[in-house]
Image (cartoon, rainbow, N blue to C red; front, side):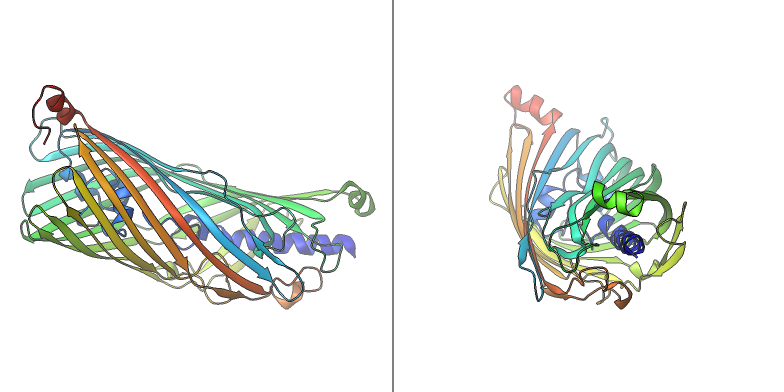
Length: 437
């Protein structure tokens, strides 16, 4: 019976891991509101108004706004404030935050051409670690969750007239998820874990592309931008491993249980649109919208190699389409000092019966750009407010073996960003005593 209980628990673990996997790579899971300090400081409203190499992630058409040769670097750091109280019999628990910066590096040049700009960037819209006490009553029994997604992109933009700019990129994407879990299988409502488990999932390099356009129906006054990232298919390879203490291994005939899995995933497209209002040389304001039709992904089709823990199965998702609403802008005190501000709201893709890390979010952000001697230095900060949720228990089938997990989840976090851009031509002019822009 105990061996059966463990295998049953391992099955629940596998199911939980799989349920959380794609949300870890989407804007509804391990969430990062926007890439780039300046973009984030504007509330993510940079579909028409992007002015640095972070446009690789948002709208490739804005690459055409970068003159000369630019070398760009950005780093972001998220500080989570997550609190979970498992009811009615266990205390509350808070997460901890390892230093885990999210990086972006890029280079671009117009090669002296009037209307063409070329660029290359390596960036990770997701790259966070969420760590909990090793013997705490946290939701999903997660001890540590690590997610890493990296894009390698080549792009080109064309700006033949003042009223239009277009851009396109080709990319390869690599994704990795490594989670650690703890379970109480052989004890009843015991806070100490007697089973630990690891779930590793990854993809090989997957090709992708993206495109964008910005039109100016009233040049220098109003611009409208649109960008598109198409749907694509990936195959996630994974391994789930469970380990029990030595004593239990002797009693049950083994202390390590593992299985490999294959999971095809059909990622939906991403649509972004924004309208930018320009006030001559004093700044701009943008209203923007992002839409991801997560209902495209109807279910997971899980293929287990050894089927020692569970049989092959299809798991329905019932995910909802998500909308992200953004408003933000920039005010220019002069050529050297700019201030940014913005707000955005994002809906969660998860249905009501999967609660926890993924909730509706409100983000308030601000930032500053300092421009001297051919360098742009950006600072960004934002606070992410997430709705409180009551988390439901797992299916009744598993309640006899596992803590049922009911509780109250509260979360928010702070985001700190910094970026620097070197414009080689402007630095050269500044060094020779000439005005760098």
